[in-house]
Length: 106
Length: 351
Image (cartoon, rainbow over all chains, first blue to last red; front, side, top):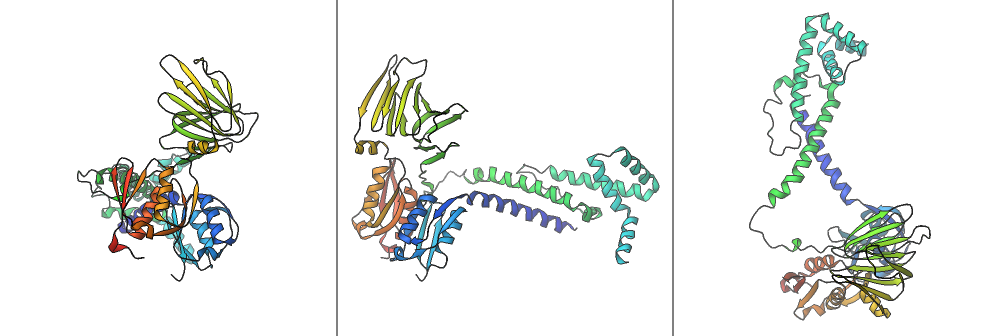
């Protein structure tokens, strides 16, 4: 292996260590049990279980129906599963523990 | 046929064997390996030269370890000289991987330890909203299922044994939501007082000369530790409050009946999820102010035009302020200790 190959190895591991450490800090999992239902209620249950705030950025969101979520998941994974194929999307601010929900077409 | 040729060619290359023997020597040889190594060395001069070269290369690699944890260390300019090519890397690649890993971890620790200090050493600090940090109320789940909700500036020390669940309140205020276990009493020790509970919820606040105990659910018993004569053991029921005062040479206890509103006021700092359904910002601010020592002041009357539908935890002021800042262009200024002024920026507001 040539010197540039060794440097490549070192670089890959440095990046790997940074990536693993940052992933570990952001991917804490918790237990979720949110049934399918009208968004107004399901997001309230989700906020309770995730210890996050929810802000509705569009009108009429409360009439949408979200997917059920159950099991040990990261907050990101849980909210992704909840809104998948529902016409809703979200933005999660991990710094402030607040999730903004809006309709996909907006 | 092709693989056979390769094998024979490798067998003839003394550098491959030399590298193997260097590694084996480093790990320690058995008696039989020592004999085999001596035989190989004396076999011919090429083997001795190859071994000598590989040993030097190994020593050079050792110098790489010297880089660990030193942020200011400079890389040895000879480290990657051309004689590196004499190392039989294919056989030693896992060693190289290991060394690379060590170096990477050392580099990561060095950077994460020293870089923030270095960057933060400037004298001119620019005021930035991101520097205002509102810590949220901490929740501590204990192994028995009990939960401690710790107000700001609170310090506790759980000391669980098989006979009792002891928690020392060292400073501040906490709500204890206790899981029932008749065989293992839950005890909060604070300033020489023991608050004993079996399946209940209560709030204990330690300040300079007093301890306040408010029971929100069930029953607790107050006991004095040996060094204190007072208070006498006393049962405290839901909606009752005990105030234990410590003077220089005297401890006194008083009891108080509380109505539901007063009980709630005593535990108002406990985080709850609040549902704001299409309400003006001023109403949300009012609720945050009621539940937090940090106070928000709206400057201007335009805030009533902005309405919000949201679920907010009552201790997450930071999340609320950042939302106002980002979505509505509202500026936040820390006016004095624990008081924050909010003012509207018209040009960035798009209703």
